[in-house]
Image (cartoon, rainbow, N blue to C red; front, top):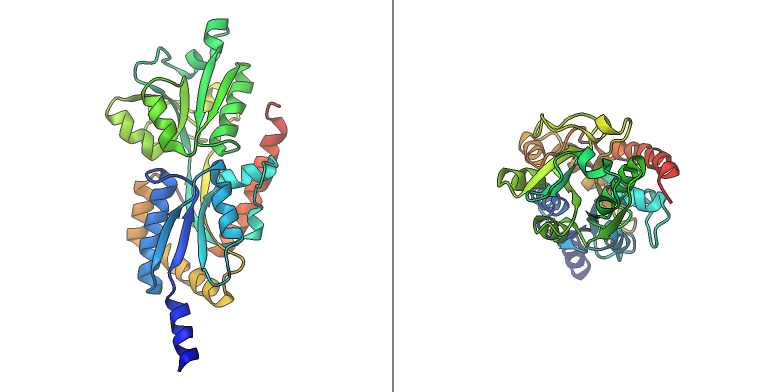
Length: 301
């Protein structure tokens, strides 16, 4: 009876869902959507834990080394792949974690505070006078997709700037709104909220195509051919998690990504298809490694 009770207790133990950014940002919102639907499917508590810092690397390491008796998941993104291919300190190879699926992909916007004197991307990056070359750029962390994209933009424009890295997009946004940054890179869903209230202006989107949210806003690649970026959100499990629970989560995730309500919630956060299962996520990680490795080879030193 005692061993049976321990087995039941182990199966009902809460799953910790770690997210590498502060509460309120896009990754945090995605994690809470995932937690809600997982709880419904597996009838087991899922608790979101924010471990911000180093562009998600601290969170990824916590999940990588999670104890076998503490079932742990990670909502991570392409920043972890960028960190790995740029050989950032303590970076994690996502192939060491167990893929459950993806939550889609999203591009970013290049935004300035509404009082800013910059009206277009060329205004921002194209002026070569010394007084305008001293730009400050805000990103949610070093070696993130935002960081690499900004550095590639500056390199293509042959413009200098001071890179300022924050512990997530929320604190960076606070400085941007106060016009203490020349520009920042924001998620689409965050940009939509602040653009509507006329607190920021959006100069460009980083995606391969124009955004449906901002159809009149040009892409970065319209000014700098071939330069575009987006980030994929992944759901990954600790390698120490039991095979039984991994299998259950993989099967349930395959069902969740076919739910209309779930997909509508992801799309409301401006996440775009495809929404992949475990096998698709593994392939996507491999593809992204190749893509970001290619970009890193041409980034400025």
